[in-house]
Length: 301
Image 1 (cartoon, rainbow, N blue to C red):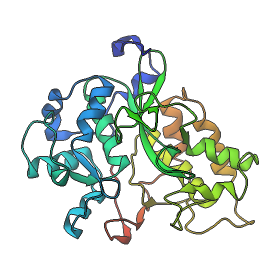
Image 2: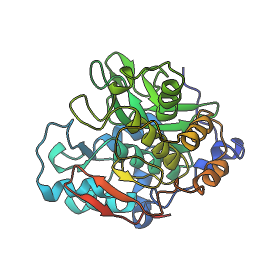
Image 3: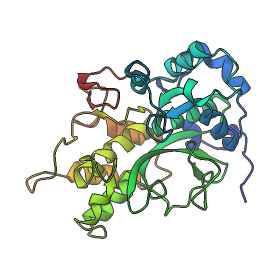
Image 4: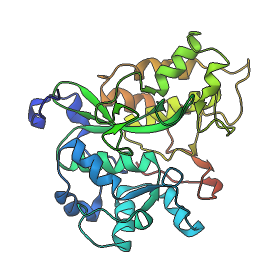
């Protein structure tokens, strides 16, 4: 049974820190349009699902011009693209072929923006889902909102029930954060063969220990309010398989911090200032599904 949302003023300084918009979730000139989106997290998930078509999971074919929408970073720009195609209020779902071309990150960032607009603490959580395909843990971004007692995870990409699971209150065993997977691998609970089943897909080279390691840094950035694209790379990230000479001390320490659901936002932001961890310094798109490769980018913040 879900606990009713409490007013933000009763939450204290911890979760309430995730009410303020980041530069990426700030809807800017489109903020008034979010008034039409209900404040209930389940309803928010329903609404945003009507505005984004996943570039693969939707089964639709998009032109190169449309796929460029995958590289939109900020909610203001994302809403602008949605409204340019159809100016209807945001509580009106669009036809799948008219929706923003995006991915799990975009659905989640839109949901986070809508909840923050209504004063609900919300953030994006980066990790791996075991319910998107048989025998593989797909990289995924889900919504995490505070219900007055605890942080609840929800998947706005999917209907309320998927594969027999509640997508509005995800079981911890269904979605595992990047930090959890990395530390399990480091401790030997996930061996060298099993870690290959964590990544972008079983037929793709983007999987395994190096990929999970990079996702720990993505998880930190998102929690600290820098909600990067999933194809951004920077600093301490690796673009090839692990080597014995690699130093993982910094990533191990980041992962340990991220295990605590109550870690203060200022601690995460301070950690982000350490060399190699801030995506706002020297980031580039490695390989985007839009076709962009190796492009230097400026991430707001």
